[in-house]
Image 1 (cartoon, rainbow, N blue to C red):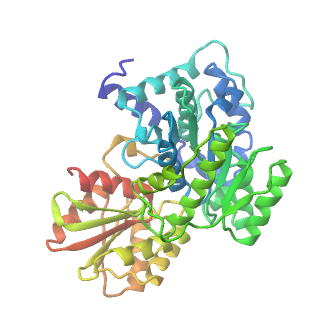
Image 2 (image 1 turned 90 degrees about the vertical axis):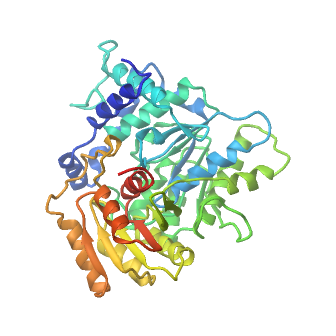
Image 3 (image 1 turned 120 degrees about the vertical axis):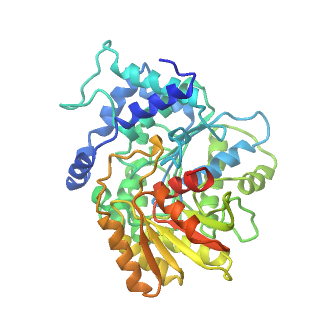
Length: 467
């Protein structure tokens, strides 16, 4: 396989997309209440061994493991920036996050940079071909175990393989969904665990109550490993404490948000909570490595220089300099409240605003739009579209797309009920929506894009590039 060209990368993307769990299988998992995932970690261990590693080899990666409902990605971004500013020998820092915004290689980073296309293709085919090698045979943990994990599990496996091959000093691993059965949770002895803010999300898999969700999230806690969290609902906090005791871990440490005087590279008041968690996790990681750091200069620099695209991000359209885009991948009620507060505090009030919105298939569009309205966000027009983009990296077979655009039309009706005088428009793709908005507004205008990180990624590609 030629992995030195863009063709090699694009072939890897196509082969990776073939591993996506289809919509019907996901519905079966949801219908089972997540029970179909209960064998996933033993199964995942067999994949690790198939690539020539032992599960305990992952302990060498000095993992910082982070879960949560909202803010876990931003927390990981702060951690990456903080550790990159530590004095002394520069660390080689691995970072695994999801989802990607534009290109899938964003999910696996080293020292703050996505893998080069050639490197992504190289490690992809080492993993892909390694799993398909006839010898030694793959140990079947459960009847019917596939030869290759599905999309997210494959990328997790590839990330662990890459970080071992690259001999990183630390691997920052963001949980995909939940924690207990998540493929990142194959790690047996992380350096430290973090639980960001909890809320209601992925109910079909994690449960419909905050206590059930907290049980899954706290599943990353390990014996003897410190766990840090932020202020949580008391019922969720009880679950976290109980799970720490069950796992023979120290009682969880709760961190408080940083003060308003601390300069952060990520916008929004909610980021002060994520930043505080990141600092605590880094300090514990430093302690576990036996490092001596005399000055705290790295904290101020790391927090100020952190970057995390698609979250509370603004940019001007290169084709329309008077158009300011405000993009935030908020997709829970709590994160939408933070997004709305950020937008109303940041956007110029003397120019009209347009909303571009889509809720992912398992999200409650009504609740998200209700929150935007409750926070006083006013728009002259609201545009709705599915998460369909032209880029191969954005192909998503996990979602059933309604060619009649019924979900988007439903969202438009919800918004009309809130704001009868606001014009609503439905477009079939993200690219069509961007072209429409740029053509419709000639003067100064704000555009808020929210409801889904997949939507945000498509807009970043279309609005900052060429449609």
